Length: 317
Image 1: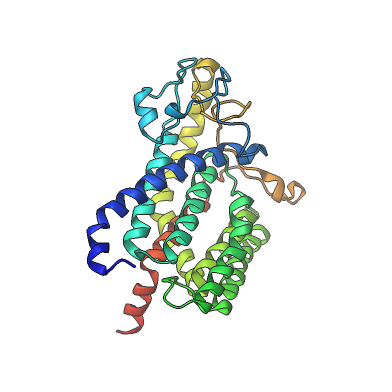
Image 2: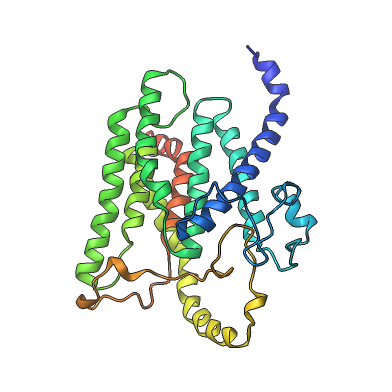
């Protein structure tokens, strides 16, 4: 067993390892983001260019570095590879480092790394496709409760929630809050609410972070949406009006390329799926520009890193 002095000497090595591992996991997250909305397997077939169908060799699939070495172009057809891919890999790598620095060598670290990459997938897919993947949120609820069970049985795990009732109540409270807000918005304001994907997402966050975490996440997400999202709401009509003009002058062959196995168009424009709402009730999605999932994900990560300490400070004043 390593002594604290030996662990300290390996600290930089662990940081580098966390980043590299996170970048590799981020590469897999890109595959999930591209394939899940299309109902495709994330295992087979291997990654390939959707235009020229060339399979991506291992040396062209090294996170971040291959994108730089290839100058953001497919080796087979020379069409551009979108900057989303190295960005997701970089963010996931940095996130894994932050989790390691916060929780150290503990059981909590790999669990919260998985939790974090799930939220990265949620964020990017919701921005691109306006959907929150059930593949993350639905299994995430029992996984969060299972983590609490583990913390209840095993001492010193470093996990934030160590009571089963707290995790279960967090899932119920988290999902219940968003569901209530969604119904009120639909029934009273006659406009689209947050959507059932957000319900499941906050339920998952509550399972991992407890009932206080569900409230704290929603509060943090609301502030993030206010600060970051409001400019998007005001700029979205202008963007929407110019996008149609650009579409008339842009050739399809100049679209970005995604290095994954999809036969759809390489550029996936965000769109709201109105199937959750009844058109007969006069509810439309016109003017609904802001996906809330990324803000819930950001609020969840903020609470994971700082929430319990902030609550302790606040109630000890």
